[in-house]
Image (cartoon, rainbow, N blue to C red; front, side, top):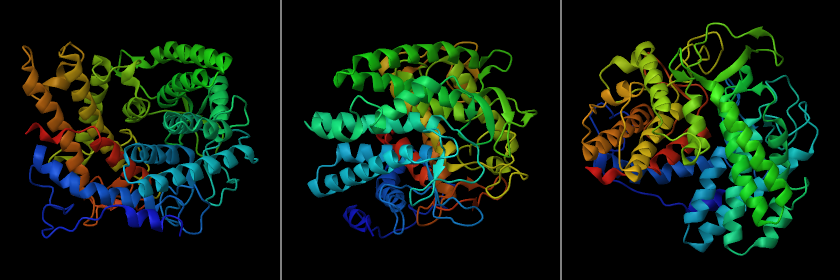
Length: 473
């Protein structure tokens, strides 16, 4: 019952008309201010759905269930990656909360998550380290065969908790940060993850989809950002030697990432030397994959890579986005029914249908919303940059939005933001009347399937809309 009080404090909106709210009313074109009104009404409910899956009744305080689904499929576990992305939303809400009661509620969630995470780090697990991908909701180790380790998990967890630590430092809570989050030894939660990442980022591991073993773009960009931000925190707390090490390793990652651009494909690829693994150990070479994967774009978003690593306006990034959109437009029947927007999947050759791994892959809410976030953040980035450069690599990307040389800059920004809207409308159209989102969208019918109430889906929605500017029209 821990979060019932927190849920009660979140705003509830009562609306006379449901036509604007209904997920099934997405066939009409919705953009700009009209979509902004829908988002404003919908956001509190999305946040409530997300909070419902934090410290659920019967689970350990600080656990985040990936989904309340316990059978076909069973997602009733605490995944390190999912939890970090979800709790990053709570960090943002904490930073913006004005009401002291609500702020204290978010702070309690974050401390619970911190203690739960520290417990995860200290118990025995099959992988023997922070790269263990998931835990039972009571905090005990999951000892069944699984794709382990997954080294993006500790990187993302360190990144989320570093954001929290910085907020506490701004509030003058230095002792709390040193006692609980970062004390300069490996006996603190952030330091443990940063030491692991700095020592193991070169190691092969499983990807975020838990299917392939090798080196992964997503894992590397997540590791890069966690070490960059961790170095800043370490210097603030007078741990200069560690800060220097983290900075050195982040620079080494930058060099390693150069190998993920594939000139023949004309896109960044997801993995290098990947092996397809179904039994938990490296098994067979990964045949039949082009390397195109939405995880590349998610990695750039989750690591804020545009700040200093790969700008969202990089023509190679834009070429990758265009190729993924073309593939998903082609293979998903639901994208060819005249509806607004393109539903995005994980990768074109995907066979996981939400229940089995021998079916046909589908669009996911979190990837579709991730593409919406990309376009919103691209528009914001270009607005600050003050210019758009069209090259042979990104010409198709811009052409699809009607943008060509000479560029009408103001109109181009509007078109890019409208493209972001299209992906939010995809989610709006396929979610249910209570604004609930599962993991996947059936590639033929458009109905939801797979794990219900996927917490990551709500996190992706809230993150995407936080970068939108719906007043452009």
